Image (cartoon, rainbow, N blue to C red; front, side):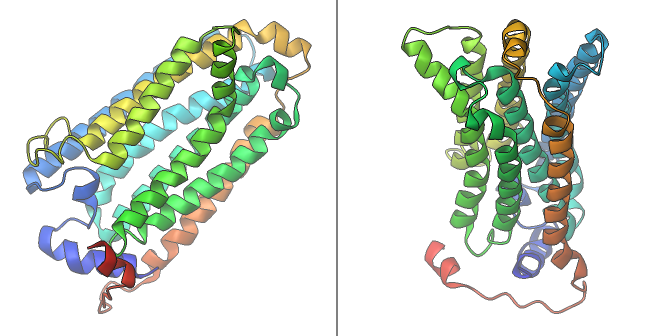
Length: 328
Ligand SMILES: [Zn+2]
């Protein structure tokens, strides 16, 4: 595990004064000024998006008649988490260049916020978006507890993937992608079923916004893994149009359509869902959020501890692994 910090400090800090992977994550093949400009764009994007969702959240809260209405609790948790994840991302990009340790720890929190966002998606989908025939089924009743497990899996695997970044970059990327794809697929299973029902002649209610969300989610994944367009023209997209900036835009655009779809489902299905007795509980909403938040902070603490414990002046030894020699 300690290889992460030692390799980072030796290889990259000396060369570029920025931790290894910072350029890969945001602006590869570029100078410091360009790098800073690229970071500024990424931070601004995330902050603007966070403020947009916060504005929608405040408007929503002002229209609610009572916070004791348990039907709205999954929406409140979801709205809170879609404000938190772009904000955490902007903080991660802002503070990650302070040191090798802060670089990795900042992104641990970024991953934690994204995994909590996946929990918020599961809560809102489980409460408002379940196909009629799945309401009160085993999957419906266990949807949120499984999503809590998924958030633990997501944060653990994505944080662990950083420790492989230098020695096994391809494996690191594959693990990090899998960490986010698994909760996404699980959360989206009810939506996939509704799309299947649509092709079988079922209801088309609000499916367009759900489909736009899926489209942007697939695009986000493609940009995250492909590093296009900068891979085709290195240096041309250092300020604007870098894949990580496009990734941010696609993620937030997808979240916007998802939010609209969730709001529409919530409003239109209220009477029917309430009549089925499918009312969200405190434990299944705020309780699950607190449990997941605690577990995620614990995981981040476990992965951060080796970075914080190691003395700064300890001599570093970087050893090439079998994986490194294979992938280089
Ligand atoms: Zn980012």
